[in-house]
Length: 158
Image (cartoon, rainbow, N blue to C red):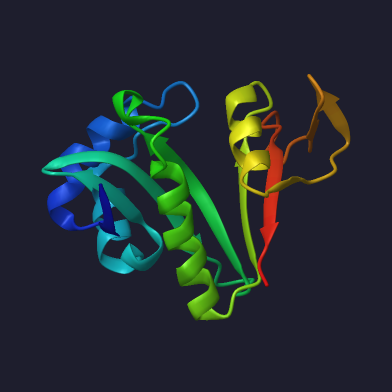
């Protein structure tokens, strides 16, 4: 397995991969992935095993808060889980963040996604204090708009 930046030729495979992340990750349009591959490839790494796309992270450096990188989507193919793919992809995003001088990675998750909570806290992310809890996970109401309550996780970088 190796990681590399997302490129335009990956678009059909990344859409197929993202479909495996439902219900918590939903594929975007071909146009969106073109944008990520051509304007954000440094923070959108993919993992490949031979010719197969086995994992991906879609992340962006904030223009409004340039010290932050927001991680939008993370998916590892179910047949390739527990092999260090997510960790390798996160390390790639972390290295990019450090090269930009960023001080924080952060992401959101649906409160019902308990496996995501375990994934992020195991990797050093902190569940940001919210205004209520769901199954022991702190949640911020309406974080992504009305009715879109999210658990927020952050990793402070050195």
